[in-house]
Amino acid sequence: MASNDVNRIVASHLSYAYPEADRNAVEDVSVRVKKGEFLAILGHNGSGKSTLAKLFNALYVPSAGTVWVCGLDTKDDALVFDIRQHAGMVFQNPDNQIVATVVEEDVAFGLENNGVEPAQIRLRIDEALAAVNMSDFALKAPHLLSGGQKQRVAIAGVLAMKPDVIILDESTAMLDPSGRQEVMNTVHRLNREEGISVVIITHYMGEAATADYVIVMDDGRVAMSGTPREVFTQVAKVRALGLDVPPMTDLADMLRADGIGIRADVLTVDEMVEEVCRLSSRS
Ligand SMILES: Nc1ncnc2c1ncn2[C@@H]1O[C@H](COP(=O)(O)OP(=O)(O)OP(=O)(O)O)[C@@H](O)[C@H]1O
Ligand SMILES: [Mg+2]
Image (cartoon, rainbow, N blue to C red; front, side):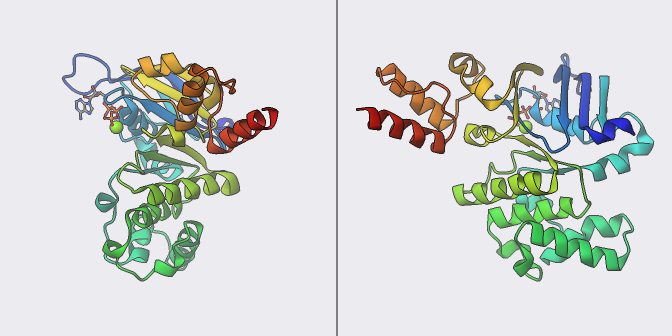
């Protein structure tokens, strides 16, 4: 399919209403995720992020509009199985996602259910655990792992299906800062090295700052979109949508308010360091 080559997910005028709801949880959203692209979906609580993610994974079927995952229309019941292999989802609570009592069995779970041959299963488990740096834990009991390690096992379970897109719905929300960093490093590496497209939903603006593209949801609609720099430099608008800006953008904003001539579009710690060095070398 031609669209396979470039677009992993295409949503066109997508709307969704929960049964009995009096308004759409997702309203006329058009967005695309290209091959190798890293998208962050932001928005205050109840703005429609998780609903959108579930529409991307054929967990929900659109009330109006269309979603294609690697060219496959999610409205077609016969394609759901394929679609879930192309687009795997990782959720918030690692404990709800782990089903087996041994790490490698957990990673094998989806493969076994899909009738993959045992020799292939072995290979895929080994590859997937290596890809998330968890090979040493293959025979361990999941409940002994840290939150970050459990989420990496959950990601391995998705990876074993050889997906084109991984969707993470607040998958770092329950982790401590080091666990969050482990998971973010892992998905960035998979994105960079394996060309897997990534969609993250997050309340951490620092994580969103590392995406290629950001959309901000409000009341089911896309209220802002662009590169992280394009979005987060509109500090007042981002705040009006109930969000913070990334910590370094916030700091730059405060310094500017104090009359310090720092660049307004600082997003990351590295950029802040660069700016501070530039300013101090001038004084
Ligand atoms: N199962 C459901 N049945 C009915 N309404 C729902 C259901 N799940 C979510 N909603 C409603 O749909 C809207 C969007 O919810 P959604 O969970 O997509 O938001 P969200 O942006 O993911 O929020 P959060 O940041 O809290 O996770 C909200 O108004 C919510 O109350
Ligand atoms: Mg949600």
